Amino acid sequence: MTTTQISGATVATQASVYFDGKCVSHSLTLADGSKKSVGVVLPAELTFGTAAPEVMECVAGGCEYLLAGETVWHSVGAGQSFSVPGDSKFQIRVAEAFHYICHYA
Image (cartoon, rainbow, N blue to C red; front, side, top):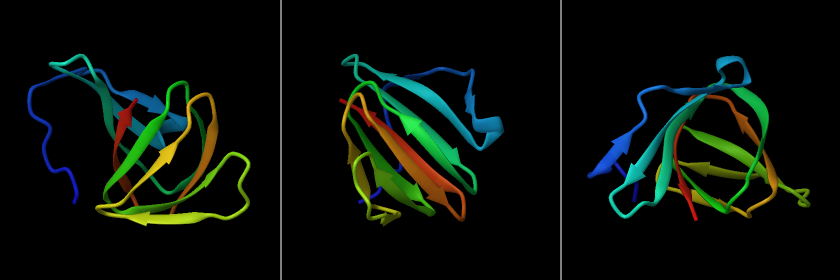
């Protein structure tokens, strides 16, 4: 199931812009102190690094991803997600806008 709304969050109004505008996100802090980001990746092939473990939830569009140490690309679409270990990297290939929620552990 795709998350369509996050209630009770404080939103950082200044966007984080990465990779010359190919990824734009806003940080959220929930009442319990947990953090998320909501954003979009435009068509590109990019490499992201993680500090904490993450769950990337696809809200719309889709992507292919390759986790560090793997050789097989995986695909996700709306309503699906994938997990990324902390202190790691992953590659992402996007052919159409990939709308996501990043859930931090």
